[in-house]
Length: 349
Ligand SMILES: NC(=O)C1=CN([C@@H]2O[C@H](COP(=O)(O)OP(=O)(O)OC[C@H]3O[C@@H](n4cnc5c(N)ncnc54)[C@H](OP(=O)(O)O)[C@@H]3O)[C@@H](O)[C@H]2O)C=CC1
Ligand SMILES: CC(=O)N[C@@H](CCC(=O)OP(=O)(O)O)C(=O)O
Image (cartoon, rainbow, N blue to C red; front, top):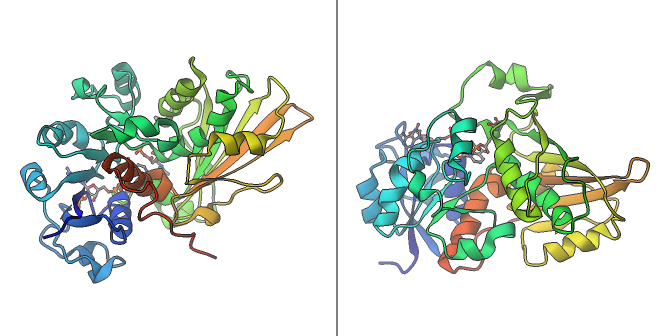
């Protein structure tokens, strides 16, 4: 018997699920009791995740919601879109909190879901019950939530870069431009296609989802509008970059007033945010500095020639952009230390 929280990972063979297993293996308050994968069903976890090796003596199983209810106190859903809509209601009805890594419950407006995800939302009654799991904006709501919609990786990096400026009403809300570069693991392990072949990705950087068509646009706008207190529209261009992990986001906006000491402004805004690191003036982040960590590094400067502020953030898409943030959310909703199991430093070099 154990007094640790019994936790399940649905989709453990994926990049997000695998990262959850890696991080939870070192978590002081948790015991992993249930892991699922269709591909590896019946095989040891080490077959799906050789890197996590024999530290966790579990067998992968085909996902079954009743088994999850029996074996777990809390369930991470790390599958594709649609999985949480189908199964989160039953898990929560059985008293099992859910942290979902997909986009199923992120958008508060069901019409936005249909518009951006090109299908009807199948559990609309549950949208209002879900909490958008960006702790730096919604910490108190997360503490009380049983259904947490873990944010997307680009939206995490963009919202953290811009929130302090919008909260201080320092920028023109119509002038925001966001460029992001993502590592290829952002596309997941199951997505096959020419775009993701080594010889297409290696030594090349390319934009995609250009001109307001990427489905993270409404998610970023939702967070920024929440902070601004009125609708914010953005221009967002994601880029696929030849790295495995990491997101580097560069955000630009026109200043409405004297920016003053930006580092002080950001440090004050993030005083209660243990995973946000504000760099000193003149320093800027790099994906390598956050690789394997749950930290978001943020650097900024004002271009005095154009009166534009430039904010640059870096995260690891699989950690602060997915699994690490999901564990941070679990820590908050279960009353654990917010940083439990998440204080590792970056892999370097
Ligand atoms: N990769 C990233 O950087 C980020 C991903 N996300 C989101 O996290 C979720 C997982 O992404 P990621 O790990 O990258 O994706 P992967 O493609 O790497 O993994 C998907 C996982 O889902 C499992 N799966 C597939 N179909 C089902 C099903 N019907 N029932 C249960 N499990 C299923 C797969 O296992 P098997 O096929 O063996 O069953 C696999 O373990 C997605 O919703 C994604 O949008 C969010 C933020 C960042
Ligand atoms: C490089 C790459 O392909 N990245 C993914 C974003 C990953 C993510 O956060 O996806 P969800 O919102 O679906 O959870 C993409 O652009 O679709």
